[in-house]
Image (cartoon, rainbow, N blue to C red; front, side, top):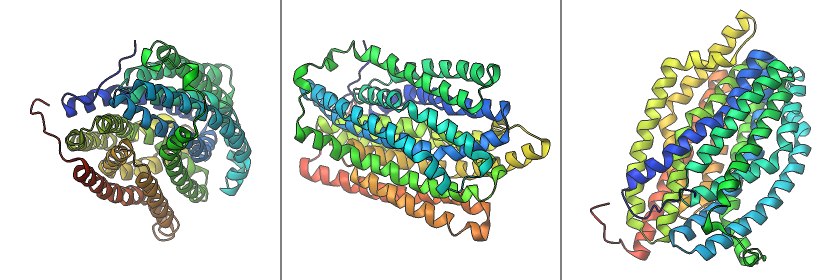
Length: 457
């Protein structure tokens, strides 16, 4: 039986932390996908292959993050129905979400394959890394149905307070990915293709693990009555999810522009930039985990009418998130050079150049990490309250800040202009999200009134 959790009662701080912890561990193993790919390819194939993975990064993230935006958006309605103890509507929401996910998976499998070569050419990808990037993306995009299926299952489970099943799924998948990476790349010498195949098979394993648990959950016993299409419910789900998908699309477009500027600095700089970008997932692991926790917590308490608990949870969550960010920043400052070295091989001169580029970029990222964690907390709370429009607008702010900086400052500050673009995007989005969160909570209080607070909570 899955470990669902009612987040409308009990200590907000303990609930958020206990829900976020398994997600953090799960994200650690999820990041092993890309990190192991990068380490094995960087060490076993070379710097050019590492640059090829970097060239593929943003297009890969664009397609996958749009899919994740849809699945996360669909789960918001499930969280609200679960918080309101309306299991009938929970099942109907899940069934209609599943129908939409099937259509999305088919669409993006085809669209992804069509985009690969034109987008890489548009980004002026160097010829010596183009072939490897095309190979990697072609294989990874072939597994989009499995990726969509896993993200759908994980999002539904999290909406019901079950953060442990996605954790166990990621542990299983990470082990599969590591073993297959080493076998395909180091033993069979399949290179970049081997890394991509290993990642795809691991995604299939993570989906099957979640599916096995979901089939045992009586709350999700969907019958034929839950599937007949209802236009109003489809519209409601798409109204929640589309802004989140569009938000990720907009952020990705900004990333693609950054990647085009990075490409102009040559494959050595691309390799160093890629090594740090592969650590980006580790830097934000706790941020995304706190974010998922906050979205579920907020959605359930909104469904239960507990606006007072939303405010308390955010205050506690912000403190935990900021201190976590500071701890990760210190680790990266002191150990970052050693960590990025795990991704790099080549001649001594190449290794020294790539390591210096990567570590410098990592220092910039570490300095702005508390801002990124605040961004996730505010954005997730708004999404949990059903407001996905403001988070979408924050993505547009990120786009403007990121593109504005990366297209102007490198002419003055060279590569440092690229490093600053990410922090500028975080700051702009966080300011907007923070303001709108407090406006939104104020409106909820005025419409519903503060409920009596229970001192025991």
